[in-house]
Image (cartoon, rainbow, N blue to C red; front, side):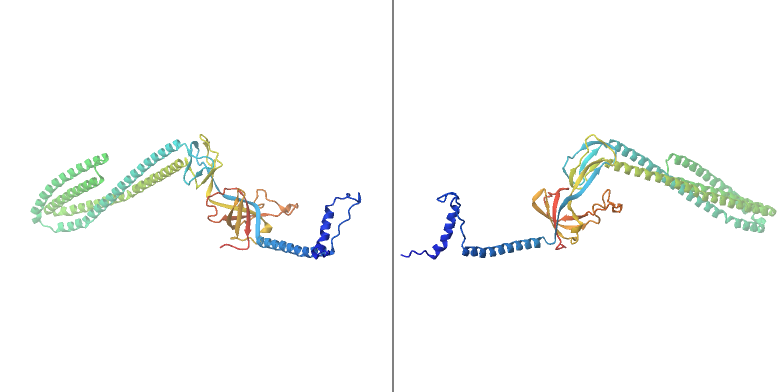
Length: 474
């Protein structure tokens, strides 16, 4: 009824026709080799496409800008480098003595504990040296004991002799005024004292006989004591006691003789008063001689202090030799202990060169122990990256050996010198051949506690680190 096409048909008609024209082969059909005419896009379609392309392009640009801004914000203040590796303490283990390895209790990469025996050196020679040193120490100690005993004996003898000499001097000194008083008394006596003097003479003679017998017995006892002392059968105290008894008996004998002389003097004085003065003077002379003798004995006893000093010096020498022998024992014991080479700390055995039967020398390296308790990372940053890096910055660490795992750490310290300045042959820019090279500074990064509970990290692994300079952990 209504043959006019609808708006939809009219609008879609040219598009369908254009599509049909695109699918029609060129140079075929009724027109032969004449190419088909290019389809023409209606102006309305072109305007519609332009109106859609502009918002899409704007949206794409906005998305790209937003992604770029997000990437910039997420990486702002992040310092990255792949010039990093794990580091730890590696303790070298070396021999401290000469010997042959007789036992090897470890293998490469074995976990060892602190104090565990790793290598044993033949201890035979060192055990013999320790036994010899102990024997020398015992001999030196015996010399010290003998010197101490000799010093004690000499000191006791000196003290006793000095005491006896002083006692003798004190005993003889008061006799002089007594003799002088006796002389005055004898001048005043009368003949009536003859009978009394005779009785005194008789009594004095009896006392002399008694004290003489006691003195002889004490002398024999003292002589026997000296013989027994030399044989070590009795103590020095017994000799001193018997010596004092002998001196007492001898003094009593001398006192009895003095009493006899006094009695005889009294008798003679009674008979001949003219002889009393002479006898009294002789007594004074005798007493003076006794005083001089006692003083000489005292001087001789005081000189015994020199012997005491000599004994003390001999004891000091013996003690010095004993101390030297004790030091030799300590040295021998240390050398014997060094035959057992132990692990300095917990860790893993590495770089082992020790073999069973090998003869080692002092300071010869045998193996190394990688300390297990402490692993850190050293990142070599360019000097241009250090401006914002601070101690305490958190660090994200990835290890090439464990790609699927991230370790956390923080900056502990920044190197005080660049790597080139501490190299074996540091560059000398004063030669004139200067080429500016960006220097690398080592940064020590410690792992956060618990970030490696299985102790997976080994020394020397390659790492990549990302330091967040935007915050600092306390």
